[in-house]
Length: 235
Image (cartoon, rainbow, N blue to C red; front, side, top):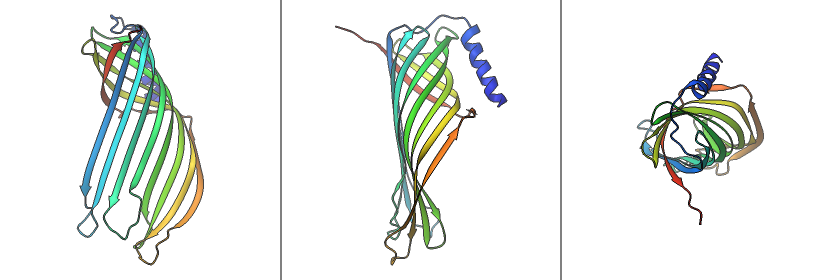
């Protein structure tokens, strides 16, 4: 908890008590995006069937500066992870995780030098997530927990922006606070067997609800990304 207080005190100090020239202009628009892809094939050991893992994470955000030190915008993101088994006896879905979400954010800037600025970003968002978690029950049976959930949350992040040129800037985030997180959904558990006589999995259903109102600080949340700036032309 002390780390959260230190982070907030540092953020307020940077926004209120540092003096420098502004690098941004009111009514200037921006767009940024991120893409991460991972494709891997592996074996846990020589006796196990081979597996192939595929993952992607895609996000796009856009917005506009309302003042030279303030902006607001929207973001959408999606991610997918799949793990495919080559063992034909395991008729198990390869999809591990799928998420689709959007958020609305605000940014507050405090210049540090001619081309550097500290920024603070509060945001709220809603995400749909599908997760499949496979667990081995015994030598022949596997349990697959499938969860569909909606997640409503708020976050507070911070970082440093480096204005490389008039059109481009490099953003580096280094901390994340999650004060609110509420999720609810349905859980469907299926039992699969490597026994070829058992073709239909046994199912059970349930529901899940989770919430968190205690702020948590994640100092290991570090990211880099580029942002493109432009000015809209109206005819």
